[in-house]
Image (tube, rainbow, N blue to C red; front, side, top):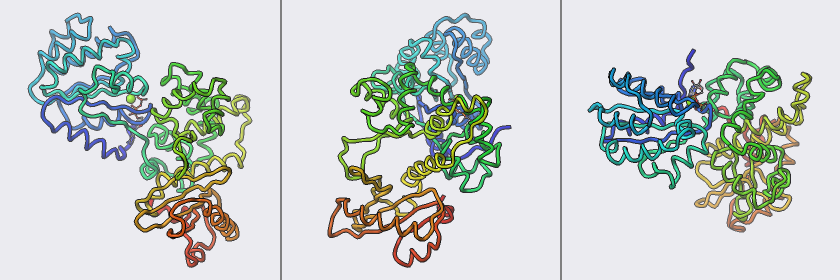
Length: 454
Ligand SMILES: Nc1ncnc2c1ncn2[C@@H]1O[C@H](COP(=O)(O)OP(=O)(O)OP(=O)(O)O)[C@@H](O)[C@H]1O
Ligand SMILES: [Mg+2]
């Protein structure tokens, strides 16, 4: 059964706009595995009659050429082409260039990276034909693929023959929580916890949608040898990177809480200066992100896992693989709640704060051993906000203590001292007697309040 298609309005509009323009169009669509590239393209062509949609296999060039040839022959209703023996990409694309229809048609090559992997020549062939014919033709070409590294080096980078020919790049990213929660029937609290584990990756959300309880989902799909997620992250990393071992160890290091380049390098066992190119690749591909303290030195960044599934998997599956293999693993409550706590903080900064404060500059702040989860400033009103985030149920005395600590730490934050207006707040799973704090001028929000904005 095909799932209801959720959002992707922005990408669909972009594609439709390009489709409506004149002349040849070349679109590059890329993104991590399972993110919904194929589905987006399938939805896009639903109301269009003319075109070729080819999904490449990871096989030899000859098999790939035959596959696309058959699709093109079918589209052109051309029995001659079907019988022709074609050995080179140039022959096939030249044939198409000479036999194109006059009205707009699509040529979608999904898993394009498999074609490059078997024969890089396809890039220069396409470049040549683009310049001589396709650029002024009705073709609407989409090259789509995962293996992000390959896509960006070979197709998007300056060095690629296709550089400058493409009319659009679309990087398909995870769905936001607002959309992700539409997949599942769990309570808001569980949906959030689920999101902290699998993020907004449609395929993973569909897997979770088979369960009404988060615990059951984790037990069956993560903490079991037979579970879908028992090997999935390993599979993803091995597909994306040739130097599997290094990338695997680096992600492992970061997931285990090593955030500084020197600590990461130590964990992996390589020289500190050699770690940077790997980290940069991981960032470019969206697996890792670099954070700097909001008013701190931009050169002193720390590294964190961005793609939730890897963080969770290393900390709860990979770390305990022996127990899982022997079928007696149950995650410790404290470990789970500290994991959710960390992810909740990120989530607040990324997806919640702008609903609460409107536009402002915001980030985490730290200095030496002191840290504040969220500091946000509004330059025009001279307001500065200090927030602590907690994925737990807070009693009145907990909130009072948190605010007291925030006030102490706020003095260490240098920003328009003397002129600024300070505001303090707590964002938590549940907060007792919120109204009382609000009357005293504090900003307090819990999941009940967030439900309105999420
Ligand atoms: N926006 C969406 N709404 C609902 N379901 C979606 C959406 N996007 C993707 N899906 C579903 O998620 C699953 C994975 O999507 P899809 O196969 O398109 O991903 P992909 O990016 O092509 O992955 P791969 O790189 O592994 O080929 C499919 O079952 C698809 O129907
Ligand atoms: Mg696909």
